[in-house]
Length: 121
Image (tube, rainbow, N blue to C red):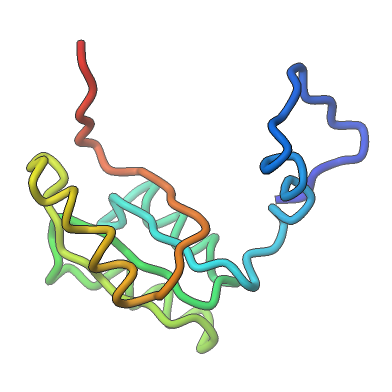
C-alpha cells in the first residue's frame, strides 16, 4: 500500500500508530497472521503479504492448501505455515496466538478475514 503525501487523516493518531504509518508499504520485517485464508479475501490478503518474512494462514479447513501453495509459488522468500482453527469455537481462538508465537516468534500484523465473529449483539 502506498500512502500519497496528500493523504489527510481526519483524526489524530496515537503516537505508536503515527510513527509506523509510513512503514505500512513494506512488510519486509513484519511477521503476519491472517485468518480466513481458505478462499476469497483471506487468500488475497495472504498473497498481498508476500513481502513478509513469515506468514501464518489461519483457516478452518487445514487440509485445503490452495492458498498456501499459491503463496509459495509467488515467492520463495517468506516462510508460511497453516494453522487449522475453527474460529466459531471461542476456546480455539485462545489457542491460536500461542501457536502463532511458537511458529513465528513475533507477530506485528494481524488481519481478520474469518467470517466468524464473537461480538455482543
